[in-house]
Structure formats: structure tokens, C-alpha cells
Image (tube, rainbow, N blue to C red):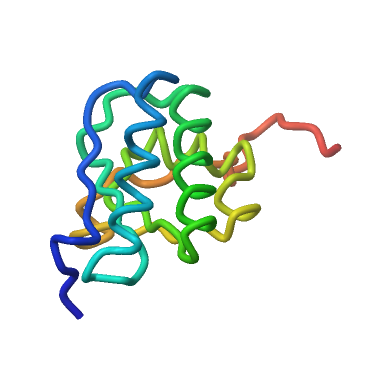
Length: 123
């Protein structure tokens, strides 16, 4: 299913608190526009993964909820996706994340070391 341009918002650069009110207005307008479905926030060009960015995304989600919908994040950087998961935003908000391309083209997620090295003691 192709998404219409009416419900797509491209977000770029570092997100700061002053950027949030106009972006929330765009989300609400896109939600009530001809597309009328979830608002896709393309965050491919977001350059920071910090708590200001997390706060901005949470506020965008709230604006969409108030307008009767939700946001879907498209192409978050691995660092941003990891931070959103770490602070629990993805699960708490039920945030939908879309990643274009094959999984093999993305950096593998970093996690707990699974191999045991010789000399490691059992916990």
C-alpha cells in the first residue's frame, strides 16, 4: 500500500524543543488531511539521537493521538532506534517503526555478548 504525500512529514537535522510545536501542527494537519490515516514521519535525515529527539517524537505521537491517529517512524538511524527502545518509548506508545531495504543492508543490532570465553566464571 503506497502512502500519500498528504500524510508524510520529512524531519531533518537535530530536533530541539523549539522545533516541536510546528511539527505537531504538521502532524495534526496531515492527520486531518486527505490522506486521513496514520502520519508517517520520515526521520531518515535526523542527525541526533538524544533525549531532545526522544521528547520530540513522544510529543509528535501525542499530537497524532489527539488528532485521532498515530505516527509511524520511517527509517530511524540505528542509534535513534536503540535509544527509543532503551527509554521504552517504542513499547509504551506502541510506536510503529518502518525500515526500508533489507535487514542485511542495515547495521546489526548490538546486544549482549553471547559467546563464552575461556576462563569466564559462571555467575
